[in-house]
Length: 406
Ligand code: FAD
Image (cartoon, rainbow, N blue to C red; front, side):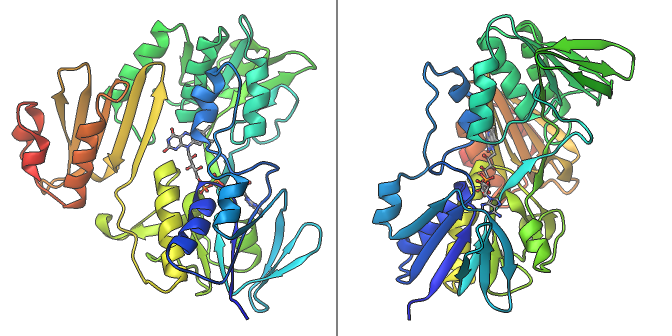
């Protein structure tokens, strides 16, 4: 009988894995199961161009025909509620049992909720349905309060301003993007939001959110009150681990996998936003990445390893964000290094390199108009992968090609 490989979660990672199984020659049965009621779609446009387009159209990752042509049985609107590892089967919310030979959990992440706060006027942004609802409300003159100065909040602030809404963004910490972006770059983003008319509040917490049918208000710990038509909460995401946890798999800031993306059960793999994995490049440090490219790369890798390739994760973290006409890209991990060196690209773009004490390049971040920093970040990523120790003088001199340092 043909083997059956099953993937739970039909996002960026799950779809990539399903197609990669075929690309890599698997001739058994492949099932891709997702709980959303849509064809698989890209999430990055939901806070960016999707919000601004004349007609809101989801950007699909794979059409029904593409999935059928690849011999992937796609079931959408089906939630998997339990996993029986001994019996090698999963059970959906409607009670049907699906047997597997190998299983991939690509269940992604969900927005972190503000405890004890719910209501019609309090919204989150993760899904196409969230985005459609939010977009319909972002009209000229509408007041949007955003809680959280991370990527989702800032991208949405930019889109909301472009749609003519009034935006107030509240951040508990003293600056924007404190988790992943160095101070100088965050300051440039802050300045741009201020120029665009976003009202930014730092160092204040939420005391209470009051909400009625048409309006809400956010009371801050300082006593200040922000009245809003809509409150968007963007305070990070939490990995979807319920299924893995119920099945007794190891959890550690996500479904814990080894450097081949296998869970504590050799027939169950996990990949994408839902998992944490050790990265050899940073001394085996356990990471959980929430990035589009990582989801794709891990989908490919999980497929290879389900087929027995035994390949290890060798990625250099990378993600991007677009706000107004500014493009930001980060590669590597800034908290691994101590010394920063800036390079002015001369095209309005700046790249900031981050070196460890021993001189090794561990991260780089760039900000500029559109794609101004893309080439340099790509080369920086190669330097990081090669564990290079370029001199600070060379990094800081735009006359020295990064290619030459490789
Ligand atoms: P997901 O895309 O979350 O997919 C997981 C799927 O599994 C979901 O559909 C979920 O509903 C489903 N699922 C979960 N549990 C079950 C279950 N029990 N049964 C069935 N189905 C289940 N990254 C960047 O690098 N750059 C960007 O600019 C960027 N912008 C973003 C903007 C927004 C608004 C969002 C939300 C994300 C953005 N990201 C960006 C992050 C990127 O989209 C994610 O890292 C990527 O989508 C993760 O893919 P995934 O397949 O691991 O998880």
